[in-house]
Image (cartoon, rainbow, N blue to C red; front, top):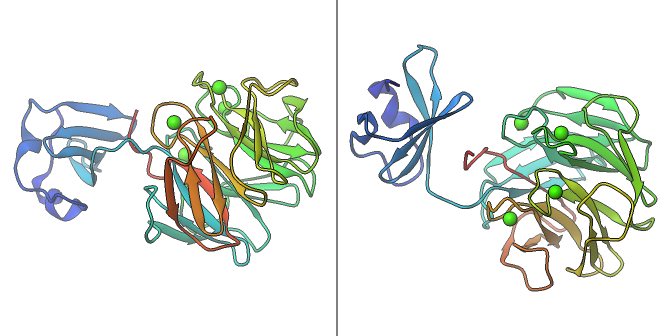
Length: 300
Ligand SMILES: [Ca+2]
Ligand SMILES: [Ca+2]
Ligand SMILES: [Ca+2]
Ligand SMILES: [Ca+2]
């Protein structure tokens, strides 16, 4: 049975409502484990705990208000390499602001180490620089893939829980199942030169597959297998000049589309024609959107 060190609790909890009773110590509480994290089902929500140095103690990382959000947005400022990440899809200040990459880099985000948390990376002239935490520092992984001018695309192509890289070049995708240098494991054609690549799990089978956004008219073509062929889903979403973004905004296991336009996000919870389900301002015109599960919550 997990023992909680009471002296660690009050100062470690943030968010609202504040800690106000001893329910955590009840042996009847539902406690589950997720790797190094421990989730305690508390009367006011979930407490995410992290096992402390001492074997039988834990510190509270944060109080989780029940939520359905899984993937949330961020922006990369191409002029200076600053990244601003948000832990909910609402307007307001960034939860994480860091410098990563250089002016002109193209940002990516994925779970490179399979720990449930998405982290940042950049693609620069045919080289990926991936980091395993959303903090300032050097790349944990740096390797060549593709050619200068390629567009980066990332996803879990083989359903092993780890996101890996790929590139899109003139209507052809080149995907790799490991984050290191080497040839593409999968290559196929989809879309036209000038299209912008996207990737996500459109059908909930655990495999991320690709799609393209056509900036000239806002058309989106998604495919449920990483093979050549006609789009399984073809919809119009957004306007010419919008930037596409993909995520599981409502934690239903399906990735859906969104667009970023002049400092505002327009997210949709189904890959169908219609208006945005979630709209909010974040970042500045000219920023490049990214999305991911930055805080790893809710836990599976
Ligand atoms: Ca990760
Ligand atoms: Ca994978
Ligand atoms: Ca899929
Ligand atoms: Ca979803």
